[in-house]
Image (cartoon, rainbow, N blue to C red; front, top):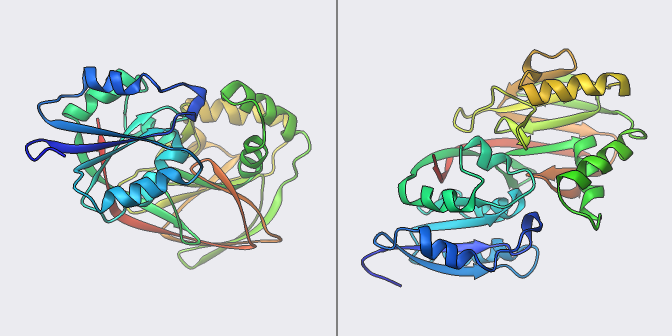
Length: 294
């Protein structure tokens, strides 16, 4: 690795977002400032591989590590760089790209590469659910259920996700939750609960428009039990960025959150589903990840 240039590792998920990335090294070669950076490439081969590559890279002489993929790939890489002196950069290739959108990172690969040349690193908050890190959004209820079902779906992309959502929403029932936020307790039936570090799920669909990655707080977004008739209203409010004014959603800000539900069930962390138990504990780790933004 070069002694005169900043060493930069690109961790590339070749299948994220259903888009091929075999030509990406050539694109990086064209748009990356070679006076400043010496690029190295690593392609992931299985789920969890990005995490392994990032953990190994964190111990080596890289100044910057670039996650190339969707929110799941970004989560794997970022989780290994918390409290590190390495800078994380993103080239978004997911179906939602919630974190990249919040940080104003271009969705065009060429422009995202060019941003590496000029972008400024900033410290953002990390969130943790039962010891597992997330950076954009975690959730339970319908969105976690849908993520879990979608993970087993052969078709990928936003269109397939929306079609599956319409199918699943007709039979999904709201669940009871006992929620404690910074010591204050709430009992709610909820269609879904999202724990927002940033403002949106992805695709400019906003659940918590006032959320910030740098304020040291999380926003607990409780979507009340909702009839099918009112779903278009909620969808419009999310797209318009008005959910903080909605009677269909309650948003409570906090730093330490405990949630108890009636049974083990799906949750998602940055869109990636997994099954966890009845009791969930969520914490914020302020100013803990160095990330390049626009």
